[in-house]
Length: 181
Image (cartoon, rainbow, N blue to C red; front, top):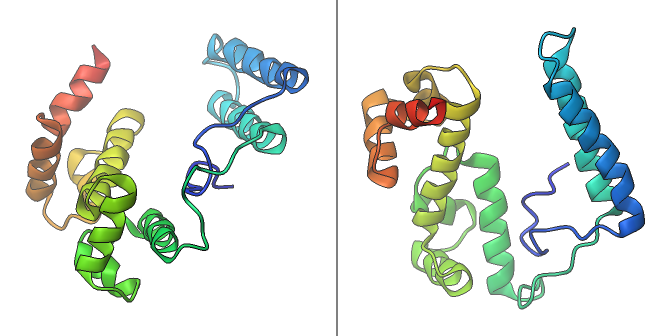
């Protein structure tokens, strides 16, 4: 289930009022579970409820196609393929040249296509995806900064820290500490 990375669809689901009751029931169960963190299998139960919530959203939700992004346009198809390839490989591949090579296009072609559709460079999108995952890992795991850097494909932990700081204006430790406050 990959409902968050369908680039040809709107990034939201519309829920009919009659279907919202089922979602509200799940949310109510989640809220109740949040008040009982010491219960047996607390986090597993929350994961199951979240998964159920996402299944119901995908089952009953209505999503429109994105305006202007169609898969019968070669440029749009290249953009969607780039985003899907990035999602599958962001931990291992960090360069524009490698993505262009895997897509069998030049770096210039990929750059022009991505900028035309998203108003961002491919490298900007790659870096944004890495930072998003780094922030998730910093916020929701107890892994060290070095472990997170290695998990995201950085061979040198200090390079990961410099990369993170360059893009977020603070170190990974500062980011994690700010979350705790």
